[in-house]
Amino acid sequence: MLYMNRRSSWLLVFAGALLLMSSGCSSLLPTSDTVTRSKWKNYHDVDAAFAKVVPFQTRTNDLKSIGFHPSVSPNVHVLTYVEVMQRFMPNPAITKADLPDAVRDCLAAREKSYAYEVDLSDTHSKRHGNLFLDVFGFKRRTTETGWQFKGLVLINDGLVVYKLSAGDPMISRESSRTKPLGPFQELDAVVTHSVSLAP
Image (cartoon, rainbow, N blue to C red; front, top):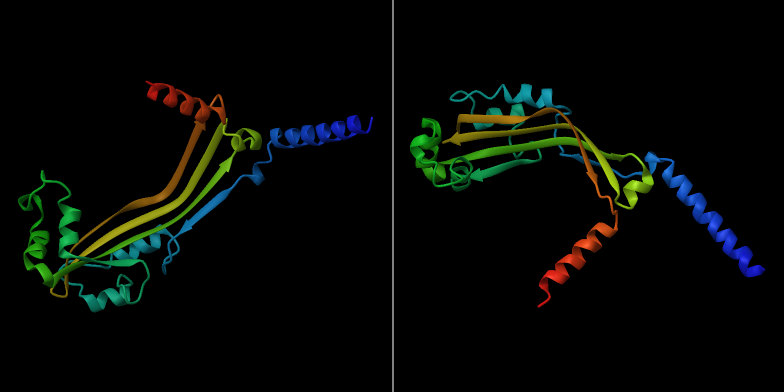
């Protein structure tokens, strides 16, 4: 009788847990934030600051006041002319003849030229949906929001000669992954792989 009572108690606890998990409880699902430290709080601020960088007018000292200089701002990376070449010529199909004149001049100047690269982002990722389906891998839905900015400034002998920028002012992505077998999906793949390797 005592054994039956204990068993019944465990069954009630297990059933209660399943009911709790199957009812949703999306607030218990994990979230993650990725924030790159910088003086700018949003995409429009950093984009407006980058617009102040003017090729053949802005010098390295000016970049300090604007904010795109490694000595005053974190996450501003210094690239050598070799790394600049790798950025603009990632494969043999692209030659120096395909590059803008200012970029070719930087590569020809070698050690006198370099670049500042900035890669800033502020993103928030959250999983939502049914807690039970998510935890056991049956169905997982993730929403990502935020912004991202990338900028490149080429400097030849202390003078900015070229700049590029790209980014996403408003990230809004939702991904969904469904596995009908849940945690057994990977197990099935392992078994199938083992069988295929068998002589």
